[in-house]
Length: 354
Ligand code: NAD
Ligand code: MG
Image (tube, rainbow, N blue to C red):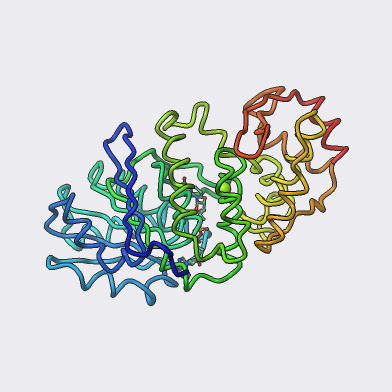
């Protein structure tokens, strides 16, 4: 992941209801993270939350930069630990460390760590300053930006949470070097999603044989889209839905695979191809072939192998709250998408044709 413009700091800012989020993207930024934090915070101590995979890789490199006391919680890696009991552990560790309302909480990890830590920061003593240091591609382009935090319940994912903007997001593309290829590819599914909904230039970068060398630029373009969408619809009541391209059928496939056969990124890849085919059936430009080619270039699956009737049933149960219509994100042309309500009957007819 050698970045062409290695020393250039790229900065974006987002104004949410609980204040401004500054987002910095720079190769090697983890090594200068404390200095970046002290530009905007003046805490007397900090508490870092990370997981058992990330801790041995990056925790010490971060901790040694501070001249004030720093404590940490290392949670076991994995989505199954994104639950209230883990948040409670974080609260207890913060109390034991003497954290007060003036202190700083740091999330160092992927989306699971980010969501748990964000929720803990939003709720501990009714809210502490938060810095996100995302370490997976998915967390860098998606979950660390936008202020959604929370945990899963036995009944389903992300059922408890809060909107809480981090004051600072520090994105270092260099940490992706340790990421397993399959986890990197999962994040690339979201990258392709951003390209199709809002910026064709991202698709051109991803199509390059050495797109990994341009990952810093790719991340910047994706975060810019997420920032723009969240700035308009922070609380997810309208436009933010556009970020769900590929996720409607993707979620249905994830569910049919009992959340074990397909990772989220792979399900989104399959879901985007299916949504694109559906879009073509509804009379839009058929972009299925270029999308399929790009996903294959990244190493992501494209074929929807589940029974169409089962997909339809899973899809409706997921979207029950919307009544008789399902909001579909249809790509009109590469780089431009629209939220389109489709009634259940029409949807059924077209899903059977996929
Ligand atoms: P994750 O946090 O589980 O990370 C995936 C794996 O990679 C973990 O095992 C982790 O330990 C490991 N890892 C992390 N960084 C690494 C590195 N640099 N090198 C090597 N290994 C590393 O999963 P994820 O895909 O990052 O995030 C998924 C979660 O994000 C889900 O819970 C999802 O609900 C959530 N999410 C939240 C939002 C939001 O807006 N808040 C958006 C999208 C997804
Ligand atoms: Mg997603």
